[in-house]
Amino acid sequence: MSTIFDGIIIFSLFIAFVVGLKRGFMKSIWGLVTLVVLTVGIYFVAPPMTKLICNNSTVDTQLATTVENLYGKIKGMDTEISAESLEASFTNLESNGVPAFVTKAIKPIISKYIPSEGTYTAKAIMAEKTSYALLMTGVSMVLAIIFGIILKMLKKMFLGVAKSSAVKPVDKLLGMVYCLVITSAVFLALGGTAYTLNNQKFMSKLNESYESSTAFKYIYGENPLQDVFDKYVNVGNILDKYTTPEEEPAIEEENTPEETVPEETVPEENVPEGETNE
Image (cartoon, rainbow, N blue to C red; front, side, top):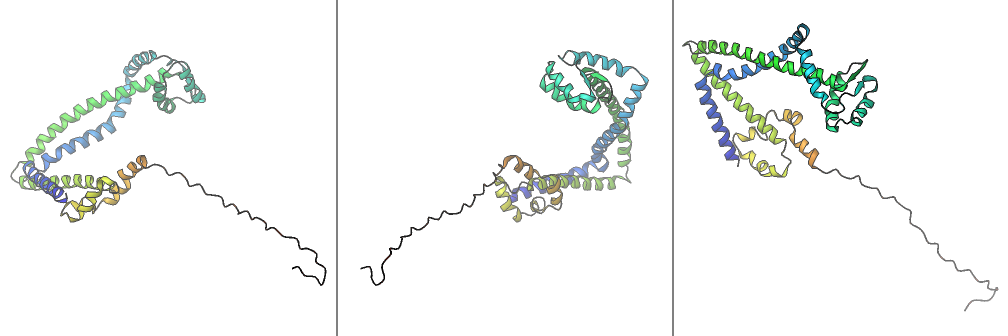
């Protein structure tokens, strides 16, 4: 088994070597660059952009009115809620006909965003937060398109530089290194996570054979990052938590003192002096 895993690892690294050498560094890394730029850009730009739209237009109000009408079709969503009597308000929701699964879904949102003073309807609070989330989603999609166009232009420019005769050898070399590093990181992550299951019965054959491997043992068993996986990505502990039955506490037996049966005593007969019992 260890020979098979060694073959998979070596073959994968060879493929990464060839792909990295062919694509080059700039072309190989651009997918990761795009993901990071889109994630970071949307995370920091979308919220202030959404607030700016809300402060300078009535789009959010119109959208909230439409959403509130939709929530109003759910029976009991016009129940009044206040922060002062929150738990009682949720009880009223259910008693007024709101399905239990709906109450369970909206409870965390209402509990977090309900104003500290005043009385509001459940549909009004949910409509406000839902419309804001929808508006932010729309803004995020528009930003993703804008960032995508900018990144496409930058990609064309950087790839043109990478193809120049002065930069091309370095780009190819860095591309090879990058693909090898990414592939190795994937194997380390998979092996480190798998080793957290080494106490399971279905891993017994792997535990017996990995030490005789050439490359696989440095991924499974002798992983240099194994302490990190054991601490933060310990799938074995999670599996044990849900599969191992809880042991019932042992009942201590009370030590009861043994009853002692008193010995029967035979009364001595009064024998006159000088006489003996025959």
